[in-house]
Image (spheres, rainbow, N blue to C red):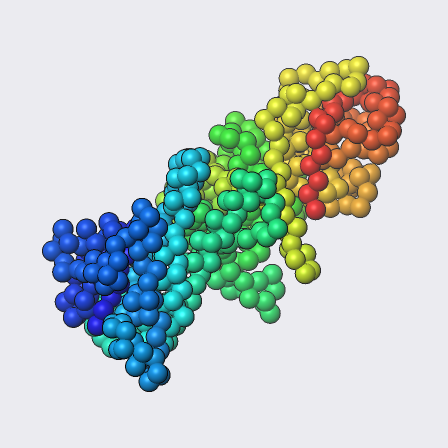
Length: 510
């Protein structure tokens, strides 16, 4: 029996090779792996002893040889294959343990293209694919985390075709993800990130009970281990819809750095948001915006969920809480609440992955784009187009309203007063409808909008939205500008004594 071991990630490989040696496997290895195994007392064969050729071209060619690929690929169930193997002195290779050159680590640490090119593995993927193709006879191992499982299978008669088939699938996932990463990198470097092909690769974190509805399957996949490292379930399991709502809540609450922000989300749309002196105050103010919609909603807490905040939150039914961190005392408050789900990132403040690109599925494909973000100076650097200027308090509220608007379904308008959202209209076909809906809701819950500021994620096509804002006492407005009727909108602001700013940047969210 023969096993070929050639790995870039050498964690656990010595112990794995020793176990294989004990089980009677002859070890064949390459380069640095070979040297490590020999230094560790393992009787390994160097690859050139098998191929009768030295490593060539600075290691670019070492395993691309019939004595290696023939040993992996020939079918043991076909007499013609086994006969050919014997005629050419090809020894069967029963286990292939390979993981690939560290391309991702290389592009993360350097922009030196020559070094990057040299960290594109050729022989490794070829061996992985060969072994995976012949999984009926060959076991392919690409993950150091599987070593113990493999040894257990070999020792206890579990190395079945079904076992090897599972590893075959994992192997093709491994090479597919590797090649996708290289192609995406090259397209980003030379084609601005938008090449002829775009590859989206994620790793499964967990299955959800179902998708958006019970008849649909669902699962969470991640980029760069973001959720594995920054998402922990303290109570309950996240559903498909929970994750999309959590995403909406996180994006808003985490957009304000270390400020004590609290966002309340229902069906991926914000129905409450505030930044006050404490998280408890922020939550209480956020809840005032739309307490009816907040029932059964998702709350994101940009900081520590403590006992006092937990007690206040437990007064209504909330489906999900995502907090930067959670105290044991806070968890105890929710012990008797069977339906609530609580998650944490185990950090001082909520984190965002800040993915560079964004995409959306459409029937038959997907659209792909640079991710949208509000620039740090978009509000502070916005152009004052009215006669009246906003005071500092209003500027702070405009920053909140503008960011929330940018992360809310278009068409939308957001009203903020003293650090708290007091009204919001979103997902409307008309911006006037959005403004009027927001005002109507605020009146229904008894919130006074007078003295608030308003933000729109896109320009006002007519002056009517400014007129509506003035009718309820809005004192300052920010919007991108760019309408052919901007002059009319500015005129309306001046008529009503409203401070009006144009940011110059549209933030549609469809």
